[in-house]
Length: 638
Image (cartoon, rainbow, N blue to C red; front, side):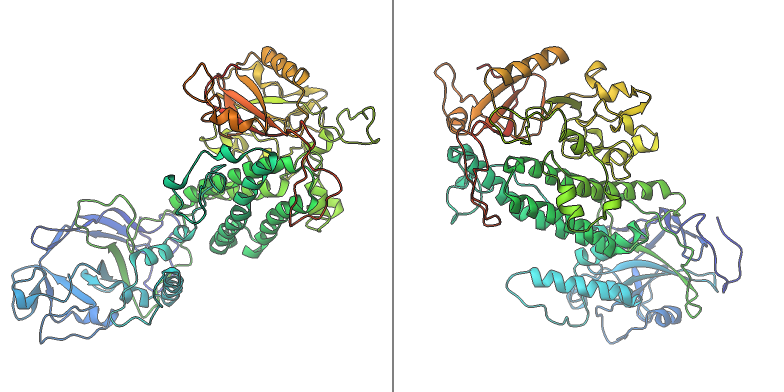
């Protein structure tokens, strides 16, 4: 669609966006010629441009006045050299005015391939009916946008500083910046670092010699070194001590690049969420109690990394933009259509730098950007609301450190979990908190490899009926769009008016309150939660779990192993089999039916000394406390 206007008038192009609409692929022919397939583009000024098929074998020794005016450069007619700007031409060859793209003899070779460091563009003056086809150095294009050039130079310096064995020197002319650096500036999502989560056991326990390279030649079964909860705890701690700051750095980069678009309050607004993440980890270590929760901290960071990866994927595919403010300077009444580098193959399966991919108007991509903001806010709420029964991170971090004021404190499910039928036991100090009253639940959901929003909401995100912070409101984008967030599955669905599944007058969303009463075809995975921190009772706990499985009509095996027994369980072969019982045991946060849940409990009282915490008056871990869980991917009878 073309809008009629005077050349100097500002044109609203939000109706159609700009960029290459179709075609206009640039390829190398069999004789080093440059071929362009026909196509259509929309210029930044809203003008529709049609470009016919072309095949270029030559370039002009003396460029046109228009080209030289827009891209001034030195022209040496004394010989064939690598100029930063080459104007392509067609027709019969004229040795006086043209030079072939294909070398004609040994003395005719340039110092490098003419196409190796060139971008193909089309320059179209708005005041004449001619199109100019130009091979140009990326640096010449960068010079036309000084802001872009400064960003490339900065990123190139950072990249060079990370490369060992050299110091970044001022480049000589012609300037060459790595294509990866330029592409990362043109597509900022490429600057977001990747974050990977180490597997339990392979941070320290499985490593035979710290002085040898990390790899299979230096690995052994990690459970060989486990004889107490301390070994499990410090393995998780080693992972999280590195992972928490690494993830915070990735978030900081995300907020630097996109923070202003993710909120009207400015990129710095998100800093408090990164601080809260760090403080919730630091407080856990400083307090020195409930140390069996460290596995939940590992699960939390795993969730956050998955949420971050899903957000990066959405950002990489997002191309909507508002072009209302795009305007050509009056002194440069030309349209530039960038076709990108000339490719040797027929097509490219990844975006190439300096190609004008079509950017649809923001109105057409509003839903896409809304989902991106939603997924980012979900990640912030995962940080903000993470808490566990009796740990009280909302009070000890958010309130005490004044991230929120008392009037903004929100109720959540940990509040009513912490006061659920608490009864003082004989011989205990009055008011002692007991984990035994917390229910163990099997919550149906999707497997951990699916999108986070399709999984059941984990135990450690307290939910509430009317809190604007409650994660169920932001867990699944489609459910939020369809007003279906009260149907999501979670441990924190309880029969109380403060529960997010409450409707009114004693009515509830039964499919979320009792999900096992509805079909499980979409939910092959069971989150098993509420057991960490309880005391293992071989008679009563096993009996309760068996009764729950019978009631819910689900099949899996539950095995309890003490920290002292875990080595033999994983590494010793019973007499009637050729493999150890616990081989393949992995922490996954749940299990499928016909698999085995392994509950690990402390063999004896343990005092875990932490540099972050000086408390040493009581043992942090009481004997028989369930401190971890693992899954074996098959049914084990014991």
